[in-house]
Length: 216
Image (cartoon, rainbow, N blue to C red; front, side, top):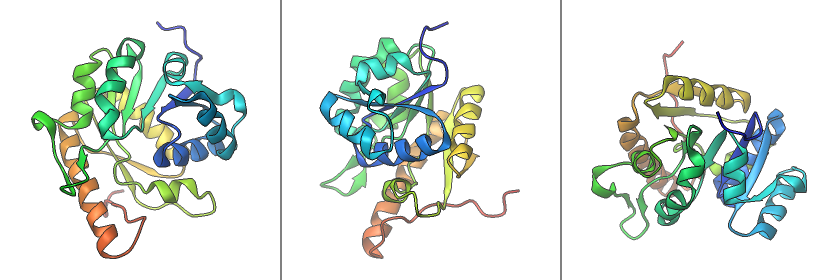
């Protein structure tokens, strides 16, 4: 049993595009959101732009410690270092890893040691309840509260209760969660994200997504 504030949701890397979009949507849903950043002043700016009280700003370790659900929205280049720094603080917590192992030069997803970022997160923070998701949801769409949301949020993980909790959060912000299987399937989620990046470039879009049709 941890001593963090019940119900708080931390966004680690909350000053990035996806982090900002999630903060705005979660804040509007009534969730208690903590914006984590390496730069406290930047966290305050983003908290304000997300419509959150300045008290929502935190250094990353403080945000991870206080929350019971932690979203990782960091670039892949900083993913491993962040997990090594925060690993002990994530014990027993639900960690939603949104990271894509994307090689910008190759313009392709490259799975390090054959593993997805979420699988590596589970290896680096073995006590965390890792759920992989939000790879195919446009950060620009999330950040614009005037825009209706589209697309499904595909979730992978080995902890059914953690996946259900994340599914509830997804519904709260107006999207549909889809259980896409075990954590190993997150390799496919990252590949889908890479595919969408290419499609967005090709068709000059910024918010293409994935929807599972025929699902009740």
